[in-house]
Length: 249
Length: 277
Image (cartoon, rainbow over all chains, first blue to last red; front, side, top):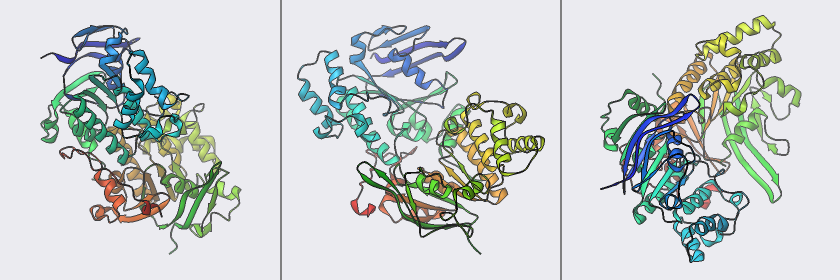
C-alpha cells in the first residue's frame, strides 16, 4: 500500500533558523493523523511546506505517489490536497459572496454542473441555500468555518489538511465542526492531517499522532498510547498533564 | 460586613443601526475576597460584565444597574475623574492578549513604573525598585533585563506575566482577569495560572475570572456564574460542577472531547429559545 503522504528529512530554514529540522512522517490513505505541539514547534510550518505556502530546502515530499519540491505544486496536487485554516475570519475573501468563494475552485479545476455542486456543498456542511449569497461578514465564526470546509471539499480532494480548525471557535461550536469533519471523512473516505494544540481534540479525531517540539518530531504514537499513558517522551507527558487543567498543590 | 463588590441588575446595551443590542441583561452577584468565575461563550456578555465594573465600556453604550457598589462607593454615580483614580489602583484588569494590551513603544519596565507614578507619589528610583520586585514576584528570573525590553521582544507567557505585574503593583483590592491565559500555550498557561493563583491568595484580593473554559474556571475559582445571552443562567460552587442543573451548563460540560472517551459523534448543544428569555 502506498502512503497518501510521505515526508523524509524535510528541512525548512528561515535564514539561520530551522523551523523544521529534518522531519519525517508517513500518513496512510484513509487514516486520520494528528500533529500536536505548542507555538513555534513547527506544526503549522509543516502543513505550509506540504501545500507549497512555504518552501523546503531539502528532504522529500511524496503525495499520492507524486514527488514535489520547493514551492511548486501542480493542479493535480490541489485536486488531491486541500486545506482548512485556523482563523475563519482571515481565510475567506471579505468581498466575495459564499457563492463566488465556492465557484472559484470549481472554475480553476474545470468542473461542470457548478450550480448543483455548490448547492450540494452547502447542504453537506449543514448550511442551506439561504447562505449562498451572503458575504463572510454576515456569518458567525462557526458558519464561516463550515464554508471553509465546503470550499475545501468541493473539489473532491483525497487528503484534507486541517490547521487548528476549531481553536478559534466556542466549545459547543467546536463539537459541531468536529462532528461535521468526521461525517465528511466517513462519507468520502478522506485522509486527514490535523494540527492542534489540544490533545483532547486530537485524541478524539485521530488514530495516530506525532508530537513536535522546536521543529523536530518528539515521538509518533497511536492514540491508545495516550489513553494508556504509554509515552516514551517526557515532553508528551508534560503536555498530557497540562491538558488536564489547573491543579492547586 | 460590606462585600467588596455588589452588582444588582446590571444592564449594558449598545445602540446599533439595527436597534439596541442588550449585551448584559440583569446580572446580579456580590463578591467578597474570593475567587469568582464567570463563564460563557462568545456573546454571552461575560466580558462586558467585567468591563462595566471597570468602567471601560465604550462611550456609546448604556450601562445601568440598580446597584453597582465597590465597597460602599457607587461606581455609576461617581464622576469619571474619581473612577479613574480607582482604576489601576484598587480595581485592576488583566486582558487576554499581551501582544495587543501592552504599549508597543514603551519598555515593559517603564509601563509598570507609569502605573505606579499615576497612583502614588514615588521617586523614580523607588518606583524602579518596586517594579523589579514585582517582576520577580511573577517569576521573571532576570527582572533587570526584562525591565528594559519592549513587549515585542518577549514571549506571550512573559508578556502576560508583565501584565500581571503591572496590574498588581499598586496592590488592588479587586482583580478582573478576562481570559488571562487563552492566548498562551497549554504548558505556559499552567505556569501563569499558578503565579496568578499564588499572588491572589497571598495578597487577599477578590478575583473575577472571566473565561469560556468552564473546566479551567472551576479548578481555579470557588464558585462559578454561567452566563448565556446576557444573563446568569446558573450559579455553581466549583466542587459541584457535575451537579449542574441548567441544560446549557450540562451541554457545555459535555461537548468537549477528552482523552480516553469515545463518543462519536460528540454531543452538541441544542440551544433552546427559552434559555435566552
